[in-house]
Image (cartoon, rainbow, N blue to C red; front, side):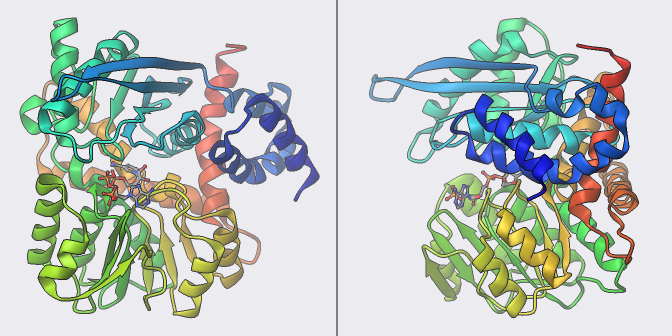
Length: 446
Ligand code: NDP
């Protein structure tokens, strides 16, 4: 490792004990930024890197609530307000039993760069709770969301901090959170994005992350005269991002043959068509069932406890969670002919996996660029809320596509190497950094 990066990481580790996911995200960015900062000493003198890894504020709070049996349950809530140099804090809420401070800090850190890449005026944040909705009734989820928002609401505001969804937080949870915010603050404002249409939500927001990832992949492929049409594609996860990734790949004539959840994967060589996707959306968003039920219904293979990366494919869209593609998985993907990895999830590839993509010279779209479509349309939802206007589906989709094309162009601008190879990871890191760093410089030592 570059000794400058190693030295910087020592200080990060010392200050932030036991946060491995945060170290991973910071190191990946530092590898691109430290050489760039050395060439641009104004950032070095202002200690921008040292400041950007330190959250502006971390809020940790108790969430007491009553189960259907009348038992008192206690969860822990978090909000990381990472950086507000270019706009109010913006980033999703995650409800997952394994959630902890280090995971949220990695997500908030990534969010700062991602939001900057969209070119919209949004700072970075992330939050959530160690809550497991599995096996909980709708009423329990509602009471939990109300208790969560009762504390969090004092830190939010349409010009201060605007959360959205993430793993375990979809339309149902956003609705409950919005209702409680409105009740306490007596304000109907755009303080959350990903809202239902009747609450001021934007068309295309549910689709945005998945559609955006596919638009980004198409842009990368164009640079090599390729496209997704007629190609076999792997998708992991089966939630919001996975569902709309499949929809857009189908629209473009590709064939998705896999999906997964935390119990296993399905392999459907015939492809997940429109009707099958409808079944998945119902299964996951309404019945809240397991992906195994897809294999039972359509008589295809179910890979218990496995991820889908051993299946032959042209492109892979990891869309479940962090570190879901290991170095070994990446080698399997390459050996099976994979030419593109486009990250719908945040940090789904381990550092070893990324090294394998680079060695193999395949197209690798890092999450902070490839999945920025979700937050971009959240930004458009904020704009519509402020204007008290609703744009059409076509209008939002057009803007989303343009934003993804611009992010791609930024990655090429900052990531093109002398031999012509585009290092999208480097391009996204530097491209996302510059605007935030310049805004921090302009604001002095704050
Ligand atoms: P959902 O909760 O809708 O779906 C998550 C999916 O991933 C589920 O199928 C879930 O399976 C699976 N999953 C979650 N945790 C694990 C795990 N530890 N191991 C294996 N599978 C797991 O979340 P989203 O689709 O919204 O988010 C997916 C990814 O995309 C995350 O990395 C998120 O941060 C990222 N992302 C989301 C955005 C959005 O707009 N929603 C925007 C940008 C990035 P199970 O049902 O078994 O839990």
